Structure formats: structure tokens, C-alpha cells
Image (cartoon, rainbow, N blue to C red):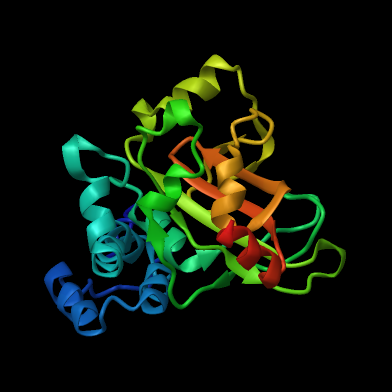
Length: 247
């Protein structure tokens, strides 16, 4: 039996691109003119696997470089490969607050995830989330995304971050030495890797709550195998946090 040759995208049998694709150079120039719009990059990724591959390799990379150039330069310095192959995950981390679901990582509350217009990530703030013996590690952490008046939970803040060279970090080494267990079912919302609970590992310093302006006993965060961090806290009322900062 003779089969008719199908001129389709080599990455997907279901692709409808029967006449081939625009070249990568053309698509690059188009998205450069669009200032690497993340919603359009995500839309293009859904067309077929060829476009999805291009977005992962090129477009998300340029988006990240444009949105956080100094952080990216630091994350890739000294031979670090933390971002290589994970550009889409980093792009999502930069612009998406993961929220939480009942019965999920943070268990007790339902707050939908959402895109954020702008977020500041700080290496200095990251030091506050590390135990003293781990503070040679480099961790960038965002300001908390505030979700106010959440009933009994009060004012809730979500924060996220990324380690530089997590594979060789002191935090990872300590988690392994402690025999910390990976979460049995939940995964990182940014890269789908397994997660360690820093609360269960007893690796959350008191300085983290000071940095966030939260209650000491109402902070929890996880770190995934790829070095992404996500957490939740209950924020102090504004007057209380202002008073604490003046002491």
C-alpha cells in the first residue's frame, strides 16, 4: 500500500501548518516589535509543537532578559545553568502568582492564581529566607502579592523566588542531609518538579517573617528540585507592621 506523504509540522501529526512555517528570524522580529508580549507568546505556543518549541527556546528567553536583565545576568554568571532549558518556567515565575487551592500545598484556603502586572525580585530580600549557615546561597524573592480580607485567614500574601545554582546550594545539601521528604502529590506550578517543604524541614528563619511583615507562625514555603520557591504568609495589619519596623 502506498501512503500519501503528509507535508505537516514534523513535531506534530495534528498540526495544520500544511505549507510550512515562517522562519524563526521573522517570528523573532515580530515579537521584538511586540516587546515580547507574554500573552501572545503563550497563545503562539498553543498553535503546534513547533511554535511551542520556538517559544521555549527563544521567545520566553528574550521575555525574561527584557523584564529582569540584572537578575538574569546574575543567575547565569559563574557558569550557572539554573535557567537553561527552563525559560518558560522562569517567565511564568516573573509574572504569575500561583494562589492556592483547598487541599493543595497550603491546604486551608482557596485563592485563584492570576497574572501580575509588575513584581520586584530582590537578592537582598532573599537572604532573609535563608538560615545563617546557608546565606552564601543566592536567592531572589518577590515582594508579597497581597490578597486582603480573606475571612478567618486575614490578609494573605503570596511570594515566589528562584535560587542561583540550586544544584550546588547549601540549602539543597541541608535538605538532603536532613532526609527531607518530597511532597507526595503536589508539584511546582512553574516547572512541575517535586517540592520540599521548608516548614517541615524546619528551615524557615525568623527573619523571613520580618522581611514580609507577617506573623511568625503564619509563614510557609516550598522549594522545588529546580530551585523555584513559592510561599504563603498571613500579613500583619499595616499599623502593626509599621510599628514593628520602627523598633
